[in-house]
Image (tube, rainbow, N blue to C red):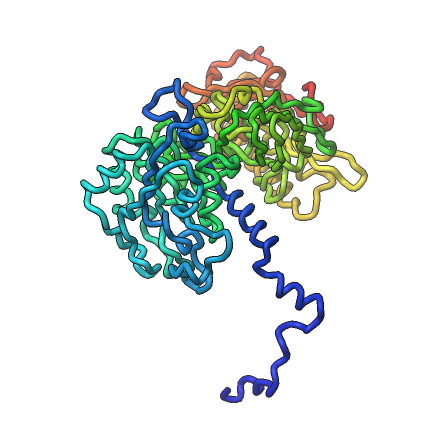
Length: 592
């Protein structure tokens, strides 16, 4: 102990008390109620990412759920393959029995914990063949190794050709912390080659992924033979039964992706909340196989219109958004309704989309449930240039499905706009428009347009008579800009008089040089292009961008509106140069 720490006590206290309640709690671990809860949790992890008709025949139903012949289906023989198909340890990951998990299934096997292979065999109604296909190294310290092929190519192709459906369960060895770190997100080549080899047999494939992280699939998910993809991350020892239940349709998959599944490592730099100006490689999917929030179901869900209690959200009030979701199937469904939003414009570049709210609801068979959300102006706040939270007034698009982002030059720049193919109609109606009253006035508020309330509830411009604590820097910055403007105007006037050569003609010279000086002052002020565009007026009108195309920012219009970039150097003495003043009224009403 080197004298640095006190000696350990001779008798350590017990880690828990011996109360009757504690004893009952300890004895209940692993009980039937615990097992039932673990099974339901495993079911909740199952996410249906893809479900298309076999052979691209739209007249046929989607591949899943698999129905044996005795239940009105056409599946009589199933080939189950893949390194995770007959392993509880690979369903459970790290920190299962041991730090790096376990591949000894007997350590974690309990009642009702079959592997996926065992669960599909127990389902009955069909013959189940099994070939491992390939073998993983069996240790997290070899995560960069490939899956070594254990069956010959001819054997695998023949078994796949003899089956009606192939279930390929791909995964990873258990891992956690540093031993499980990767320098390449690609799923090992052995498993990807296995799927490609099976696809050469021409039979429908249901791909089951049990990875603790999104792995790059390098296009195997898009093979025409891969008609269905189920993702479960790490469902635990009860995952085999849950995945088999999902494959045969005992329950409806209800998972939603908490990430955007990438198709390339660079896709990680393109999250779903990327700025609208952030562009990808120009592809239709922007490097995303399945977007954030994606998750299908077997039922043809119906979304009604997204209804708002008011078209305008006051700064201190609330608006209720509601949507009716219908489940016409014969199975109950746990479904998560996601509410997304995107601002048309913002002083700081807005995100392509943001998840504003979500709600998980139980939809009984043949029922319809109304899901409602309460929105407040602060739900749309962001960290502004003034280094404080602000709410910027303007129009916002709202929608309830991740594949139905609003289209348009402002709301969908860089967005993935795809149509949901395997769920029902009605989703397109689940969108709405909302005006949010903010802390500033005028469309695209400029430096002088930001307002704040004092203790009495009166509004003041930033840097005005009653700034909040910490906002005094805005006044000093504005004062410095005004001094710079005045000095530049004076210098421009003197230079203009000297260039004319007759200072006694200053009356005619002043108007010309004043316009030129103001233009020079604005160009030299430390403002962004958007802020320069609002100097001199509070009413806004579209201004073409510098390159002459697309949608630009805003420029002053109406009284005090002058396009200085096109002002003539020979302004008539009778030109009325009036730069206008801001309206001292408070924030704009929604009808403005």
